[in-house]
Image (cartoon, rainbow, N blue to C red; front, side, top):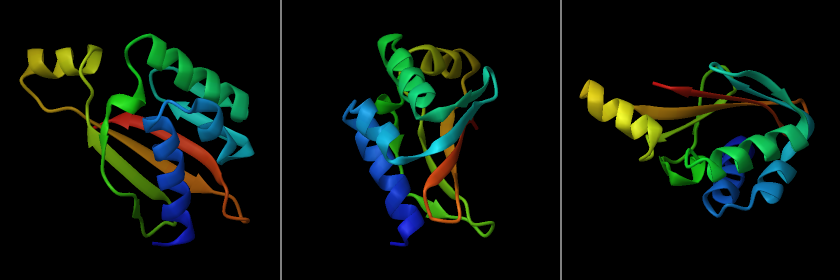
Length: 121
């Protein structure tokens, strides 16, 4: 496992355990989380708050069945999984489609995750 995939795996492991402060601690100080439906959320504190709020609202990423991180040709790491139950699961059921969630992790020169993009696919 490369350093990048290990970093992404640590982040996901913390999210799975609902250890949101620890998850944010695995990120670069100037990290930016992009959620297409919401926009950009800057900083570790912003990411921690977003993770906590999503979890409390029943839409937490800890409920996703995540795959092993995969390093991409462009240097990013992709982690994907099946959609959690709740709002996304209900939409998928109504549309009779399987909805998956993907997180793309970008990295700074020193190897810290400095960019997270979450999208449904």
